[in-house]
Image 1 (cartoon, rainbow, N blue to C red):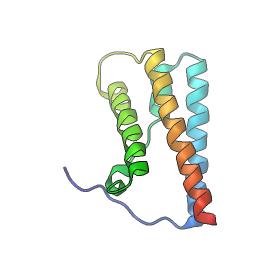
Image 2 (tube, rainbow, N blue to C red):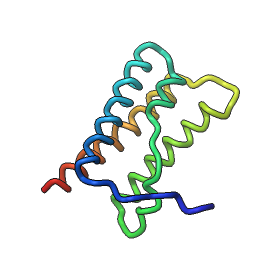
Image 3 (cartoon, rainbow, N blue to C red):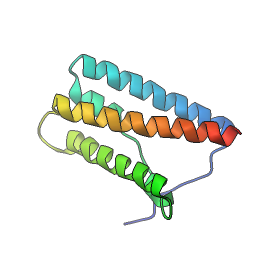
Length: 111
């Protein structure tokens, strides 16, 4: 597997990325409410984290959340079936946990 591309993000820009994540989560929540499960799961997905998880239980746990979310995302994109409500809810909850953790990290970096 090739190494994922990564780059440093200026602290000021981190709030912009977090705001984008919040928008996707809000849209995913609305999609779940409207029983648009495929859209909900795609809107809830994220990327990268595992490459920096070495040596940190906290980062490893977040990488596991991300891996589970990406499995569900791939199901929507590449399988010939529709997403169930339960799968959409699971993906949304994983995305919420990741976003909550990211928000905490951004706030800590401002200190």
